[in-house]
Image (cartoon, rainbow, N blue to C red):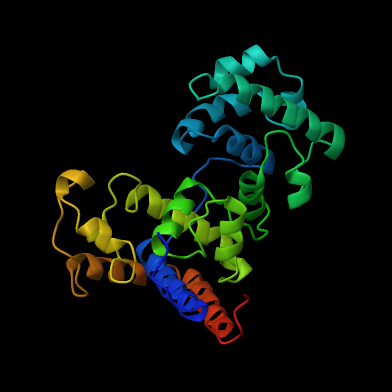
Length: 278
């Protein structure tokens, strides 16, 4: 759902305020896939399509023990790879893709992983989402991965221009409102938020720290409990115990993280004083 009509400047201001609240609610973020090298991350991300990160993490230790780098995986027997990752959905197709991916990494990049969007998306099985995951997490180059959770959450919050769900359009709409150094953590927080509170079937709006400003909250709060699939507690107030807990939790964050957020917030606030791109 798109928010009720508001100016772009007002929307960006609201986005910044809501993101600050998300930072208090989710003070620490990181990639949910286990990896130690860019090679491991790109393979794990390809494997994560249409399955959970937890399930991917359950097979990658054995996979990377057997094939620790692109050279080893490029020479793998596909049946052996299939036997390792067969608990994943589409394991046959994914086995083919990651072997082909490794072969291209060897022949074109000397076994290394490239660090540009153009080069990454030229690899077998690698789309823009995977490329952004690798850029932002392995190389610390600004990237904003858009998955199903990001699509859903940004739509409900009214953070984008329309109901269109083309990932690249969503990436453009959202990143235009934030400085590049925040893109990766922003995506992480939206994904965690979508997995835990703003879920697809039964969003927990009554417990949500954004329910005072979210344009979709009233739609779900007004639903009978039977339709949302959960008992609905009283609406959150600014003096609730949960709010106090979040405030206490946020004050325990490391000083370096706090400084970084303060600096980023100042950058974003300064950005709102500039003309918003049309």
